[in-house]
Length: 84
Image (cartoon, rainbow, N blue to C red):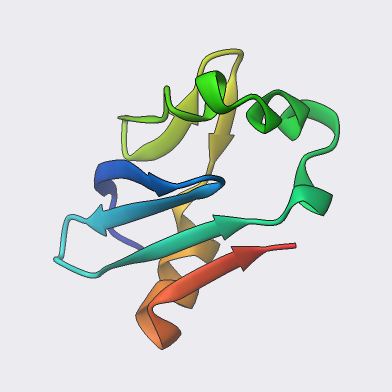
């Protein structure tokens, strides 16, 4: 089981820092090509800035979220998770 996300903060357009409960931390980068469907709202910088942690998940308004499992594995391996 992967640890929960405990901290998230935007540090660049379509990019944010994330820290897990066990101390693993790194960067998540979303490519513009990933901003389709439910993720399309994240193209608006004002919406992207509203990122927060809810129950161990990275979330935004409008029921947009990223589960921590793949994020944790990628960040633990390389310090970064790219969603393309």
